[in-house]
Image (cartoon, rainbow, N blue to C red; front, side, top):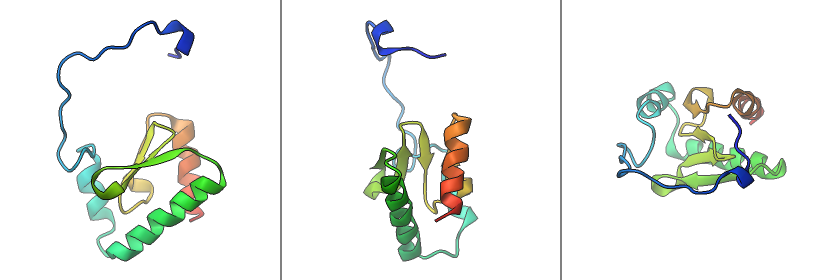
Length: 108
């Protein structure tokens, strides 16, 4: 479904939002992402995050750093990538965005 901004008259929130464990990271990503690359040091993970951010800037793709310490990448508002920033640590419902980001990861 696609909604254009002209078609939206009002946006409201119902109830209180749940606060997932691990600083807002989706629970499905937290265990798998941590187990997939246990040999990487924190410095290597930070370097990989910086390289991905630089690649996103070069291609002028909007992103935000979120979570505790800014370790989660939120790309285009729909794709989330968590440490160790590999293909298994990416979550996105948009398959086109997911495939293009996976290609970007392969080049970093």
